[in-house]
Amino acid sequence: MRKHISAAILLAMGTALPAQADPTLGFGISIALGGGASEVGLGVRVFSDDEEESAVGSLGVDYMLQSGRLRPTLGVAYLDKDFYVGLDLGYDFTSGGIDFGVSAGGVDTESEPSRRASTGGGDEPGDGDGGDGGPVIIDPDDR
Image (cartoon, rainbow, N blue to C red; front, side, top):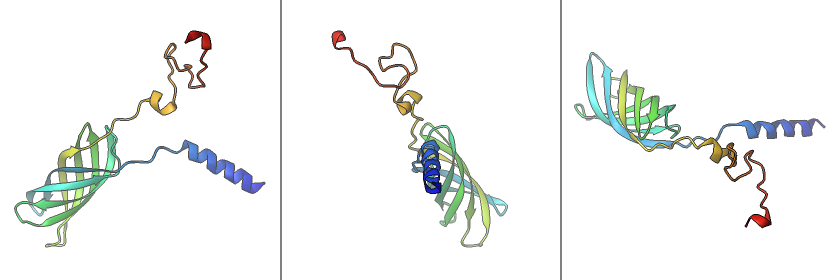
């Protein structure tokens, strides 16, 4: 009996969990602020999700133009329609220090699916699909 209850709870939890996130890739410009100076770099970021108008985690690397060094980064970003703005911490292999950075660039985002598409049915009367997401009954006389 206990196994059946546990299985039912896990099944119910599985249906209530949010959809799987889709990571996405972005390219941009970053400014590292640390050590009393700032440095501009070109960067690539992997974001934890690709949904527009959302805050996400990021992991990336910058090529710093003035020093020619690589700067691995870990941060957060805000994704909007095909662009991002981010804040991150970067590591300097040369000095062994950590610096703060800001970045912005392009990213391929996806808009949130509409409620109607995700539920499989519309909520508006007269939308032709049953109105409540239930089965659609076709009357043979209406053809």
